Image (cartoon, one colour):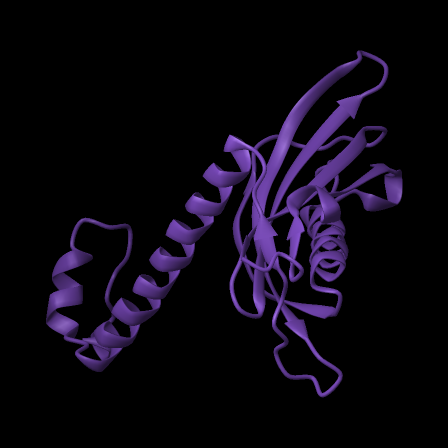
Length: 187
């Protein structure tokens, strides 16, 4: 096998640490989720572009779970690595930790997966190098990303089918025990 068009996961691993300052806060006094998303998107780009050797765009963001609040004064460290590659797409896995420097405690605040697409000079999808998996962890992450990609395709297909065969009475029955009221004009 010709490995000249393959790169290791470690080749493009990227991290960033940033101090959370008062201007990053929301009305509740915590760091705004949008600040974290912006940092995550930038880091996903750097990781993907380094692996691809091309400009990359964000195609989707999956599983952005805010597990713990981030406080002003925390040092937030974002770590990204390419978990999976397709033809022109890459899945970048990201883990975010917040550290309180006074108490010397760290907490896991976010995990997310960014699907990025490499683009050539003509703004068309460009093939990305394959991925050399060197550890059991990298193999697991690649396999899990494959499963998430397959599930995403399945959801899209099911959603398209559901739209095509939409039956209002069927959906009304599903909503009977939910906290909603179907207005007369929607029936």
